[in-house]
Length: 279
Image 1 (cartoon, rainbow, N blue to C red):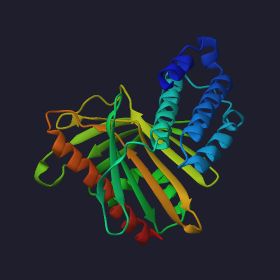
Image 2 (image 1 turned 45 degrees about the vertical axis):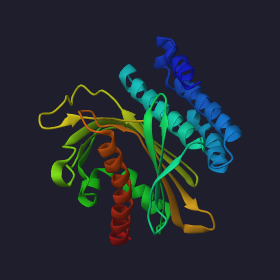
Image 3 (image 1 turned 60 degrees about the vertical axis):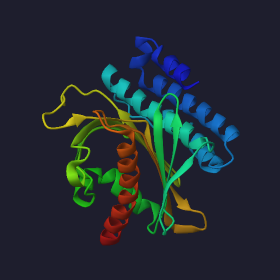
Image 4 (image 1 turned 30 degrees about the vertical axis):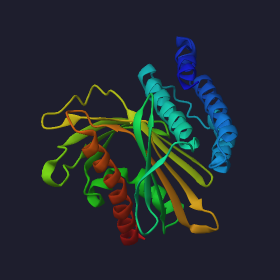
C-alpha cells in the first residue's frame, strides 16, 4: 500500500504542487489513513498511533504562507514517506527477534523485511522528561558529535519549513577501524503532537554535498525515533529507535549486525550521560 500511496502523491499536477496547502493537506490525509490501518493491525502501540493520527489532521492548517519550490516539496514528501514507512514497521509486532538485552532493561530487537532488509529496534527508558530528550535530539542535533563518540559531525544543510531538514552526518570510525568512516546525507522529518514525538528520516540526494574523499557514502532509512512519556511516570521517557542502514562496501553481514546493535546500545548510554550533565 505504501508504494501506491507514494505514487498518489507523486501524481499530483504541477499546479497543485505549487499550492502548498493543497499538497500538505493531501499528505496529512494520507498519513492519517496509514495510521488508521496500523491501529487496526497492531494491538501494541495503538494509543500513540491514534494520537498522531488525530493530530495529523491539523497539519494543513498550520502551514507557512510562503510557497516552497518543487525541490523543497520533494524533500518534504521524502520526509513524510520515511515517517509513514517507519510507523508501519514499528506498528507490526510480528517477527522481531532479540539481538541484545542489557541488565538495565535496554534491548535491541531485529527482523528482516523483504523490501528493506534487516532493521534494528532499540527500546529504552530514559530518566528525563520528554522535553529534555526532544530538545537534545532535535533542537541540538548539531551538537551530537560532542557527546556521542560514534558521531564525528552532524551539520544541518537546509531547513524547509518547521518540520523538515537536510543533514550531513559523518560517523566516527569504530575501534580498530573495522567498518571505516561513513557519511550520510539525509532528509529528516520531525512531528511533535502533544505528548508524542516522531523523528523520521531517510537517505536523500543533495547536490551541494557530493561523495567525499575518505568517506564511504552510506544510506539510511527508513529510520525513526519515537518519544513518549512512560505511562504513569511523566518524568521518564520511552524511546524507541528504528534503525535501517546500508553501510555499503564489502562487509560481512555478521560484522554489520554486531556493529549496528552495539551502536544502538552505546547511543542510549551516551544520551543518558549527556542528559544527566545538562539537566
